[in-house]
Length: 107
Image (cartoon, rainbow, N blue to C red):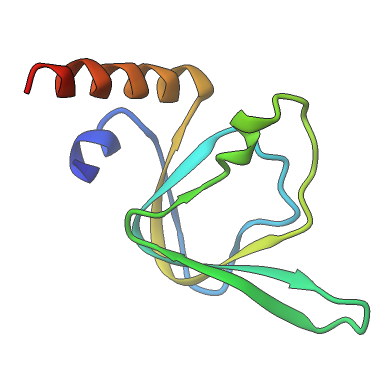
């Protein structure tokens, strides 16, 4: 399934140590096809706290579809191991949702 989705996604590759997003403004939903990302937040003392680790098959940026108003988020996404991520627009995601429902209704 990940291979099929990757064929229609906006693909991006990132190397270890780089920030995939720094206090991003979520515009797309990203599917981690390969590798791992650490979602981090800086506390009042300037310490970096890991909130969550995302890896193959996990999704990032879905909040951009929940609240349509454009905004910035507080967490950063740092690449732990080299990643390939596929970006999807809101329209693509809605299409997938309904296509999967239709396909599943036939079974």
